[in-house]
Length: 77
Length: 236
Image 1 (cartoon, chains in turn yellow, green):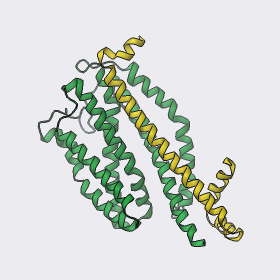
Image 2 (cartoon, each protein chain N blue to C red):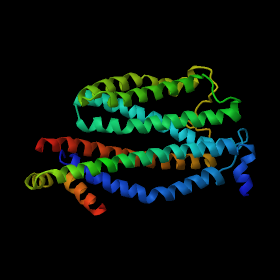
Image 3 (spheres, each protein chain N blue to C red):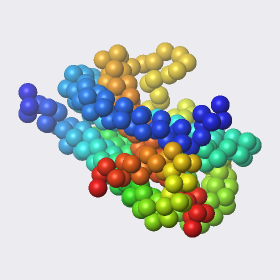
């Protein structure tokens, strides 16, 4: 059963390599996209923290995005 | 209504959607892979190599659909100047390029046992390579030009020109005598695929669409943060 699944009547190498390449590419793109997102989140959170207290307050009041990112960043550190 | 489409609202929805897709993705992937690799029968002509179709065909569908979306949104952006459309096209392009490459690679692997060669300059394959080039140029333009407006304008023109290639890809198998077989699944007309193969194909398509949605949402979220970060510099 397992041997049949692996060899697939001689087509195993083609079938498994197709699936492996697809999921490898998908995995790499997922990892890279997630890494970029986290990098930008971290950078943005740091930029907010570098603002003066008054500026920070204004930004957080005006921007829902800023407050959400800052709170999630504070949770991770 | 305008408030609903604000970046803040979209951002909240994106976070919820990412969590939702993450929660169901792996279960669906397992089900789809079980059907594609174990439960579906081998083809009477192609044997087990038909299983390659369960990644090749959805990848090709997604690549075509993505480019059509990019081109249509580019046209709409030219007419209505909607900011979000630019972000959407920028987020879709890498996904489209990735699936075009997957379709070409898996198609090539399938070609070896079926046609006896990895590559042929067949009309369908060549037009897919042309589409990959259009995707590549679209992405490079955004990386190359610093000015967002200029990049958007040039990339939109590229996408609109590339739209001509979509019907060529779709009908190449009917217009020319090619190695690539005609479509087995037709929206209008009778499909020539058995349900035992249609189910895994549609399941894999659904899983890959979910994956695309996940990547798209993460990229869109990144774009929103990038814009917010630019806006933040006004406070300095």
